[in-house]
Image 1 (cartoon, helix red, strand yellow):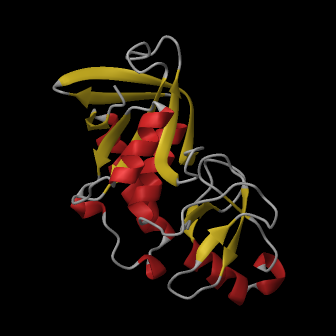
Image 2 (cartoon, rainbow, N blue to C red):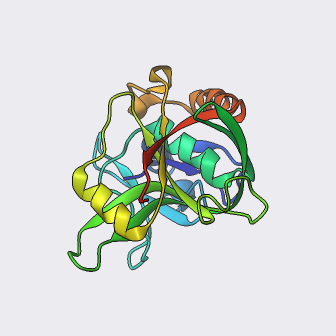
Length: 214
């Protein structure tokens, strides 16, 4: 489920909610009725699907890209937007500071256990550049789970991650980032929240190791 999208195929274009996109289509059907919107990470085409409070952006029919069935909220999507699109990311692990250099990052990455066919989702699968700190220690890649203040990883997910040999770190969201009313959240409010999240993540994000396959 996806709540946010760019208005145009440009990373600098405004970010709007699916509810705002649906309002534009209802109010200005000639201009917006058949318009596409664009996802935050790769500017892929999205279409708003009207399901009331559970409305979501979706990829065109037949597209192989998929997302999880439930949204974790506007702040969660903005955090992933930062992680996937930043070139360098200052982080802190066990009291030590590192600078990660992002080669490419994929949001909502699905992992399938070939033996059991069980599937789990990792919020972000990041591949580091060879010059990045922690490149050797992490074999060039890591997972990131962006979580609310109270959250735990289910056992079957740990088992699947172990087979995939992926070290996963946890980034806990701040309670003040929570958006209680996404239906009426405006473009300007999204911009303000995005600024707060960017400032926080640029200052050196504290991560904890959620899962180490070793």
